[in-house]
Length: 385
Ligand code: ATP
Ligand code: MG
Image (cartoon, rainbow, N blue to C red; front, top):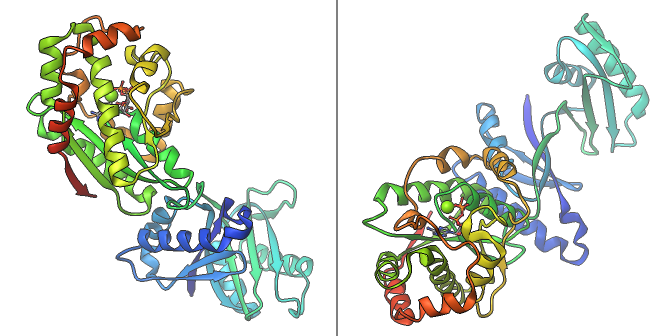
């Protein structure tokens, strides 16, 4: 029996004039998500049908499509000729053998001999006969068997609406550069912005040999875990800030380590973004979460940014809300692997929590800021993940 996945899209339909463009990007992202699996994607009255894959791959296809932003919901359906025996056979497959249920019919083919009500009553009766432990409950059924009688002489039967990822197709809202550490927060921040349709690239700072190569591998894994949400490929920039940290450590008051490092990170990030065509920076900062994320800390790191907006989607989130999201998107287990981040190298016992700008500038004045940035930029590697 032929099976298909019905993909219903989310907000895209809101986009009047640009709808065609949004839909093209959406289909392209679905195609990329299904790379390596034989399939076809067809448009069918306000949704898409994915078909032509082996039935054993259904679960894999569904799980990949559920990470494509723009998807409102999905259903795995059987498609049969609109003949009674075939409809009943397919309905039996999607129906559970017991519990309370109803049949809901949508009839696009207005020439079909029964109307929707008659069809639902008839098919419900057939199912009751097939499964004696079923009961009908039209008001609060435990499950519903949906029948969709199409114009082209076929009927689709399914019983579940699986929630999709929501959001907008990645690539329709510009390009952003995510500052990604090995922590829990930044992958979640990236996921939230990709959800709104922004294509992400990632920038990671490491402090080799103080941070070990496995720490970098962990961040690459996080980027790989984000990639299915990010249109199937993600560029990653890796910059070494070892010498910057050593210089801060050597020349500046120790409580300014993180504050100063943050300013270097933001400067480098903005330069990478401007050079490579990204339209904003994205961080995983959350107000007040740690010493460097007070409003004074953010003021200090934000002050070096010259032209790009910095998106901080987690600003209003509690840690446990962030953890919940991180679990849901699947990055949590990697995030909690115990490797050092460069921010933990030379970590002062008492970092300043409310840095005053004049003190920050005085400490920073002891460094060759431009020279250090240029040297770090020289170390940049670009990976495709
Ligand atoms: P995360 O869980 O994302 O590591 P965090 O709560 O540990 O966040 P910080 O370490 O203060 O917070 O980092 C704040 C933000 O700065 C991060 O969310 C990330 O966007 C950026 N950042 C921190 N360290 C790095 C790094 N090594 N490379 C790139 N960006 C970083
Ligand atoms: Mg961190």
